[in-house]
Image (cartoon, rainbow, N blue to C red):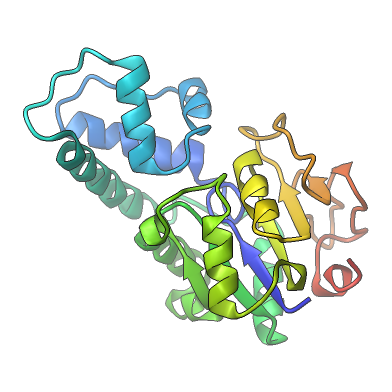
Length: 247
């Protein structure tokens, strides 16, 4: 084990339902749109990775008669920029916490000089805001490589973001462990050659197809609570470096 690579949304924190969804709806209202993404609808939209891609998909499938006064790319970019601003404000106020076990694992890895990286479809500013608000501003420097946003053209489930991160770290997929929460993320990591993939599910992803993952649990657990296991071998006292080194 030479590196731990983390997805962000849904993996480090449950950011989707009460973070990104709320920010999208605030951006829509601010733009004078009558769009409103419910909890259930947003769950369906999460099948599309990338915020700008999600807006485009919603326009195509749910409001095909919507008329634009500006070019579509410009409209989507401006709307997504507003959404990012609202999301940053939400997170900066402490509205989103890390999932149980995440902080202790990241702190232990940093202290033990385990290489850390991020592979996500969300924007870099979303990553830095979440890390800064939960672990402190300097914690972003714990991550040697941050693959985020549009750094690659194809989003998950394409393998591009994981391959980009691995190339930057000069590692093969056999030398890293990936942490994901979604089917698209697992497919991305697996197709990039990552051979150890740990899934921590959430309410949106619990029923997805994780056949390419090695271990599927409902969270990382901690010293007081063993995670509920769906696939593979679960740690007795939560995921820690000692257990990860045995994989």
